[in-house]
Length: 98
Image 1: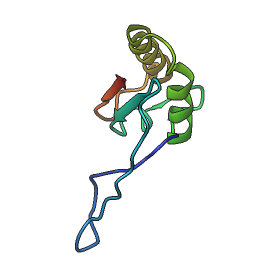
Image 2 (image 1 turned 135 degrees about the vertical axis):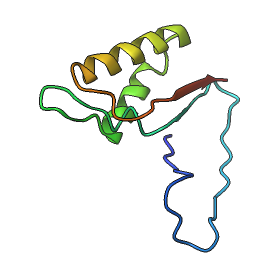
Image 3 (image 1 turned 180 degrees about the horizontal axis):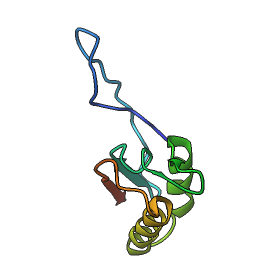
């Protein structure tokens, strides 16, 4: 199950309303909290953005790895993607295993 709920950005409504969701964590569960920096990074063969869909698929593909390995894989993927392009934004990815 993947949720993508931004909490910042331009607020056009009078009152921002959030929904509560209960997730069963009785089985091993991994959460990722992240900024848009990774997915907005330009790179690859055509100098395009990494994009949200690709980033979610990437996180799912590494979610069963050990956390230390996930960090190494994330860093390698980011630098490989970015290649010679300048970093365009801050990048924060937090993974939490329960």
